[in-house]
Image (cartoon, rainbow, N blue to C red):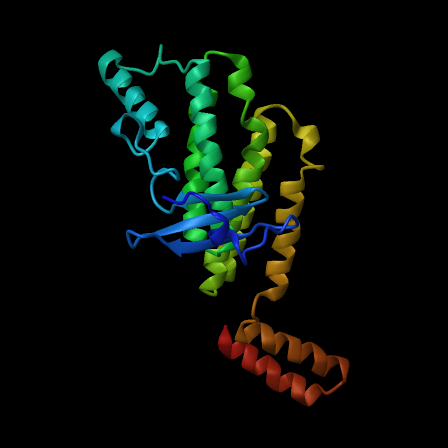
Length: 249
């Protein structure tokens, strides 16, 4: 068997300035995601765990630990006493990194539903580590990345809405993302970081872009024409436009 991957990489150059990614069809007929790296590539499954494994016969380690948590609650009647040791937290972080690479690739391929799925999933990892890690260092190990993941999830949800022409819904998704990131800083008493947060600033700027790109409603178009007519002192035209606006109300 020839293990040389050079033929796979030929003609597919690594771009250090961006994400180089593609979907391919495997020998088994299933599609997979490939990400070009400087020294080779990553190949990921599009469903389930990116490396295709099933730890403890579960879809992922996260699902395994969530199952243990459910069993603990059923047996003891509450979550009190459930803990994640450092090894468990480390394994969950490594798994979350695989999902990060996948949703980053999916975003560049405009598979926004996949991005929403994987970012939502990684936020559950953040939550379970924050709630149940025995070591304080583990509890804080992922919190600095929460604003980024929230931003990516909001972008993906908004882009799904924009693709369907739902500008107001897209604005709502972005504003919800802004609110969740601000809540994150407030919860950790880091309000001083809100103003300098790159993810927040991006979402706020993008909100204005979405508003500016929003198609005008029939009433809004008439309002613009009315303002122009008044500016030209074309009062007869302005009266007609006012009547048209009233008919829309």
